[in-house]
Image (cartoon, rainbow, N blue to C red; front, side, top):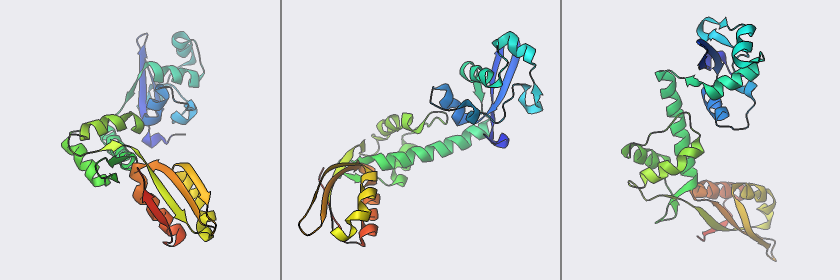
Length: 231
């Protein structure tokens, strides 16, 4: 359940009455979009208020009159879907800052410079977003904002969301412990075992993860690994 101190108000006005609930702003926005979230995880308290700041609760009679229901969870569902989520300027600023960091991180993981096939550092992406005056909506998901952001900063830096294929060769002594981490980075396109016990595979990964992928492989094999970027 959401911490009351971090909650914001979702409000619906109907029949001349005001109905308020305390919610997590981002979870409430996701829930309103239809994502598979339990409404009890969205709420700070399972109560319906006239004035949430004063903890002034709505009567069951009024809930029955307006919503034809006295179950707080059912009423909260209607408030979220039909009402608005109230966010202060300070809350919006903090949420926007955090969402911007998440968008930058995700682009850095998924995108590359198509001219060099190498990742862009997060600082370069952040600078390009600032120069392109990209606006990040704190109540939209990160994934919803990736493509529009990449399109906007394309005027500032060469960038595209691409997957790359990397050929990997690992000595047999390290292959067992390296296999699962390798497949967690992307899709294994091809693999085979050499007569000397070495493992060879072709892995397709998000372009921006190349540096992290190579660092992980080097750590797992103590540097005894061969890699080649194919495309």
